[in-house]
Length: 174
Image 1 (cartoon, one colour):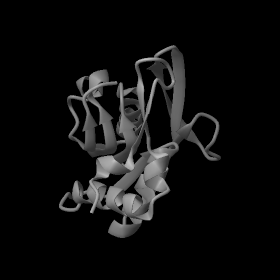
Image 2 (cartoon, helix red, strand yellow):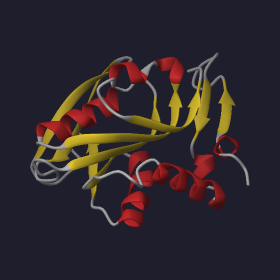
Image 3 (cartoon, helix red, strand yellow):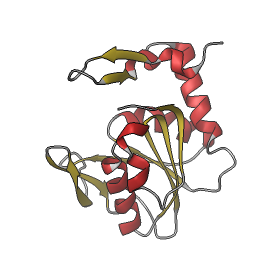
Image 4 (cartoon, one colour):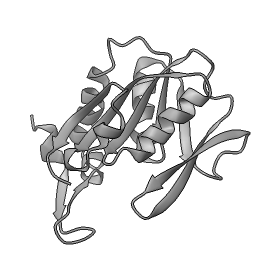
């Protein structure tokens, strides 16, 4: 059986020289790679006491949904601004060049619910921190964050020190 890292396609000098882009589509396009990704992420929460899985748009949906299904948990969408039809709460956060806003339905998380946040990648940590703050605004508690990949060179963990994080694959660079 191949290791998880072997399913991730690495593309040098994208989107700019000196960057190695870690392409998750190669994992999704291989049935064994996808199964291994879901299994490895699930191992990180299988013994955890929690109520809800939430995922950030869009790859957090791809990995979060099978986990929610397998563990018989509800799944909550955290989306880009303007994509959810009911009343929402929103959080603006910093990007490398500018800002972005994500939102969640106001009734998606009940006070006291224990939430696991899922995404494919942690880089600088801005998106997932904003997602955690949305959950906390609604009275939820983020008990774990799980990522398929982590770019350690971008120091996302520094921004998320108060949270329990787990990554299947850790890359040293950016």
